[in-house]
Each structure stands twice: as structure tokens, then as C-alpha cells.
Image (cartoon, rainbow, N blue to C red):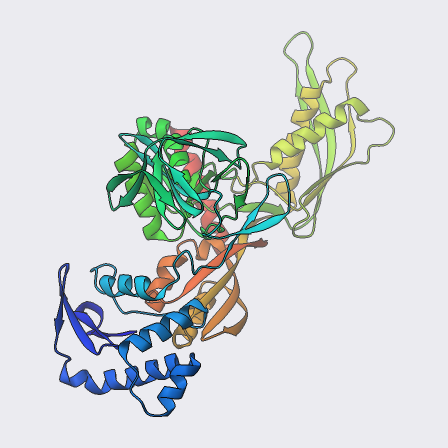
Length: 534
């Protein structure tokens, strides 16, 4: 729809192709100007292509166009709107969000060409406690309002932002929260423009608005008439594939962090967080590094909690290459009743993904039956922290095949400790190795940087699984060690100048190359030594 005046840091405005009018921008002010002479040919060529495309989408315009009649700007705008409403065109304008350039042209395009609520296709909704679906449109008289965002305001508390899909919602009324099955008192409604709120008496279908201090309503809930309860389908949240560890700046921040994160999670559907059960770290997930940096700035500004981002620890695993059979004995005598447990364990590897398996092959009661669960518990406890770098052990089969007991001194505790001792000894003798997580990475990229991206993935120890074309873009699929792509978002932005995107998901564990495993093991021993000194 437009051609830029200048490019990159030299961008200074745009040319509207339909009107042939050039605009330059100085700060927030946009001023019409003469079309630069050196752009006349480019504008003419681009406009001809645009006019031909619009005419081809409308039979009456095409007839006029083929008769070499000049199509007016108004005819072209009406043809454009018709094609956009039919889903045939996606209009594009040039601009810079960072410098607010092209914003006016974009908003004019929204008003003139995009569908109003009356033009839009009906939305899908579901009846509560049923899989039956219905379609609702802006002309339906019954209320249906979707809460699409929740915000925290330091002065008034929780703000719920919503879109009225059908019907109307009035200030100081009552609505029915279909998802929660409860009535909700609605106070003063308002519309939002930037940081300012403007009170309104009523909001109608198609309007966006907000209300404060709803009691039971959350993001994704539908407010409706109780006589016609429907739940509007919620768009799926974007994939939060970029991760970073979070570390509170102080003890006071740490105590308030999880509460603040829960409120931030409710506000931002693209942000989520969890405590990694393997590493114990708090990990944030978002759409990219900038997204998480903004989230941390909001934590500090809105909730007074300061938090630093870091690189997440990798959840490595340990396993064994070979087999071993060892004895584990726990014997302690300190006067009175002692402690005695004696077991023989056989350790062997399982296929990748096999988990942990415990087998009982004791014959003749050498280990009393009532103590075998204690041995298993000791083995499982010991496997939570491996023998070479402290990571959980997986893909291992442990078999209890012999042992001995004492009629007085044997106990569940003694056999549990004996199981732990035997497991650690057996793992050391069976050739312990480190496993690293492998993720499936899918990169969608322009073809001109495809080679750079594939070379980079190969350099990250990735295994290219294939490429395919998706419209004008190329899709690369690869299996890559997670440790190599923990900060892949920044690398990809650098290579593709922000024109590529990627997703990743966990695939499986593989044995880590020895020289890299040695580095992880050395770091574990170094950290353990520092802890011991403390």
C-alpha cells in the first residue's frame, strides 16, 4: 500500500500508492510533501501492480480497467476493502514502530479497509457443560463479552479488559461469568487510551473496554446473560519458547517474587514461569529476550520486585554404559541394638527412554520380603543424584538378587542405606556417562539466509532432519542439544535481521561427547568444593 522514503536508520516517511502522495515525518508530526523525482518510476510501477491486483479482485473494476479507463482513488479503496473483507488481500504498509513512522497510514488503513464488527465473521462459542457449539455475531442481542487481558493497577487493583462480542454491557450492572458459574457485579466501565481511562455508561458489540475489581473473573472468561450462557472460544496463547532463569536481587524480593510472578502471568498470556524440578531454578518463558526483559521491568515498576535474568541450567541426566554386580552393606554397632543390612545389586543399562526399573530376584529369603521395599526406596533415592555430576540417573535397570540379614539388628532403615551404598558403587563400576537433552528445532526463514542458518545449526552439533518450502519461506527442521540453543533467539535475530522465527520442543536424551561432559563434571566438582569450604 505504501513505499518507504529511505530505509533503515534513514527512513523519513512514505508514499501512499493510491493517492501518489508523499509524507515525511518529524517526531510525531506527519507532513505531506512533493514526490521525490528519483522515486517517480518506482512509485508508478508499484502503483500499476497494486491497481491491477485490486481490479482483478472485482469484476466491475476489471471491466473498466480493461477499457483503459482511469480508476478513481475512491473506486480503488472500495475495491481494496471488498477484497480485504473477502480474505483475498492482506494490506501492508511501511513504517517503524520504534520511531512511530507510518502509524497514521496504518490506522487510516484499519478504518478504511479492515472489517468492522458487523463485517466480521461470527465467532464460535460453546454452551457450558456441553460440547455443543454456537455462532455469535455483533447483531445478536444477548450479551457475550470476552475478557482478553487482566492488569494490575497500583491504585485501583485488578483491571479486566474485555471485548463485547454481542449485545451490550452497562455500568453498575450484573453479568454472569459462564466459566466460573457465578454472577459478577460490574462497576464503572471505561475505555482505555494509552495510560488514560475514560468512563462510559455502556459498551456495545465490537467495543473494547475495561472494568475494575471483578471478584471471580479471570483472563479467558466470558461474561454473558444468564438466560443465554455461552463461552467464547479463546485464541490460543503464543508459544513461549524463549527461557531464562530468574534470580531475586535480595531476600526481600525473593519472598515476594512468586506472588508477583503469578499476577504477571495473569496479565500476559505470552509469559509463563515455573520452578524447574530438576535444577530447582525459577525459569521464565516468553516470546524472546526483549519480552522477558520488559516483563522484569514491569515486575520492578508495578510490584516493586527486582529480578535478574540469567541462562537456565541444563537438566542433564546420568546413566551407565555397562553392567556391574556389587555388594552394599550397612553395619553399625554402638551398644544395644545395632543396624545391619546387606544386599547384592546388579546394574545394567536400559534403552533410551527406558526410565528406571527395579527387579526382585531374591531366592531363599536371603533378604526378608518385608525389607525389599526399603531396598528399592534406597535405590530410587540414590538415583536422584548421580555419581559423576549430581544429576538424576535414568535408563537403568537395578536387580536385587542376594543379601543377608540379622534377626535382631536388621531394619528397614538399614536395608534402605545398604541399597543406597550398593547403587552408588555399582554405578561407578558400570561406566557412568552424562546424557544431555536434545530438542526439535524448527526455523522458518527467508531463503537468502537459509545457508547461514543451516551452517549455524551444524556448528551447534545439530543434525538437520530436512527442509521444506512454506509459501515463500523455507522451513528447517533439526535436532540440536539444548545447551547449544539456550540463547538461540539472539543468534537467529543476528543472522536473519529479525526476519526468521523458530520453535523448539524436547525430543530425547543422548550421550554427551566426552570432552564436553568433562567440563560439566569439572564445574560440578568445583561448585561442590566451594560448598564444602563454606
